[in-house]
Image (cartoon, rainbow, N blue to C red; front, side, top):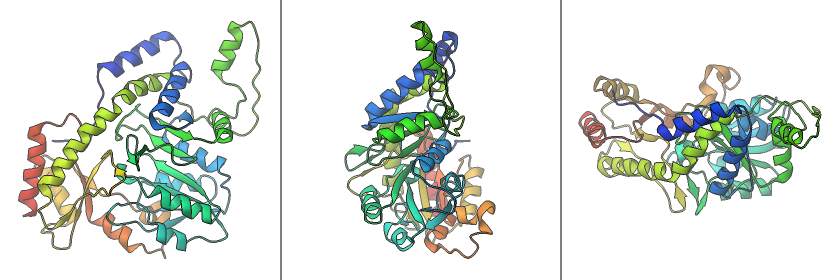
Length: 378
């Protein structure tokens, strides 16, 4: 079976984790601090805060943005459910906007129509690695005095108008889950250029403590004693040094990994573009995708329905999965949102699927995926 995805991990990461374990400092410490610094250097952001995963990153981003009970936050429904869940965690209400069917990203025009006096923020997602139109949403949020938050779970290594994702907005949240382009097993990162956000995020991720273990350790070496104070209700959203040690090695390889993934993606596009019953990913000028996943949309004239194609691919030893979910139709949301209709999101979700893309993917595997799709869809 050719898997749909697998992380690119080598002896480098294993050795780094091994050395960190033997160092005796395994929780949040010097490796986390180093990872944050290197992530800033990579993205161009002024500050970075490592956390336990992207969902916790998004939750903290909501909190520092002042999102609270009964506020409304506009976001795409066609996104992994964590995008909507992080809004609910604060007691606020997700308001679902349509997507652009070509990019899979939230549509600025529809989002603007949903703004009312309860709206406090817009949460955009860079779906499967292709950046959303950040400038359009920055302008929209400035015009309506709203906060802009980026769900960049899939977008490490992607770029928008020549700049890496991570430095365009005040709050950008990344994931290092194994399905992402680089991984720490689990883990996340928030980048920001707002020092007030940075200071508060560091406190919130560790139970609201005024000082962390590293600061106490340094003070003890200097013959001082620092007593921590818990200055607000916080959370245990910390990253471990073991994870950060892996992340540091992964980050060094990120541009190479993205380049290799793009070679496979562009090969798919080149060799499948003449199949008239499918629609393939498209990058406009100024948008640079890391191709965290590769999606195929089946048009009405497709000889196979989406689920039928998934079964056929599986029978041929090729893993695939449904397209991106629509949160408003998931059980946790569908009763509350039963009257919501998002025809573009629903159609795109129901008729798209993800196919294998990972490195190293052999020439034989790539060719087999292409020839099998051509045969099944001819």
